[in-house]
Length: 438
Image (cartoon, rainbow, N blue to C red):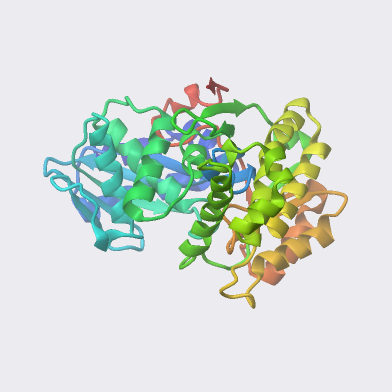
């Protein structure tokens, strides 16, 4: 369909069920949001173009903090904040993406080599994803797209992974015939971020965004991660998932993020391994003096965190599957304390005077002790905390946090059942199914 026909369908309610499933309580504003994006697409690329609609969610990390890059376990979920795209094929052999608020990215598909000038920019991700599709024998081609996002940049909700998923889904749907499955799209996004963007990330963010729903992932075999969707209804526990933006930003923190996997790998190397998952925990604990001769104290502490948090994830999954929400909350708090004390990713040593995450956690502990749960969210060092707040405390909690961190800083979210998708009026018919892979 062209731009006009699609906008008419949206305005007429054809996508209402799809919006309801994807966005839950945020669904009412989506008609205007998508129609506005179509109008912007027309302004950038012309009217009456054939188009398709795409969406990729942000993600919230529930359990397993900085474990994925050591081939560990995680528990995560896609949320009802997303990046949406209006996209149409072109015959120019060029990908043009106009992201709201940014200069247009233009990628010539005739040259998909790494461009040093693009490091740390979105163009590197687009080029890297296209290159990886081509390397895998998947068809690629040119398209024009307009994107807009309500995934907070630098929030720990993984705006970059959502963008990578979105680009991968567009190529997959527009040219590759849907041959790449969600896990493969996640792996392609990770490749682009590692090899082209220049960030040594793990695979958790991309998988949670691409697969969607509640998902536990075991990366022991990173080429074929074991992915399992969980049927969990937080509403029945009378708690809300809150993500609080403490005002920090992830800009210029690549070195902090890179230090965590590098230091953990330095400990693994002592035992002849590349990552900590290859090291038996008891061997590590029995040889601490030997490790200290080869590694920094912080590296050792970060290894302590990995082994404990890796074992904590299946306990969290078991608690959720058995309906023991109190045990789950206790494990969330333990994971957060381990991240603060041993992983040390709650503030950057470059700027110890700025500790918004520490302050947010202290306030949350004061308000929620004995009732809820709290922890650092995502990669850390800046950005957001994650809390599970009883419904009867939600108003007080939101008011206190927004008094300290600003109006709109406390986000009450829902889990969406799917990851990166091409939207259609009947998409909701295939959503919400629990599937296992691996």
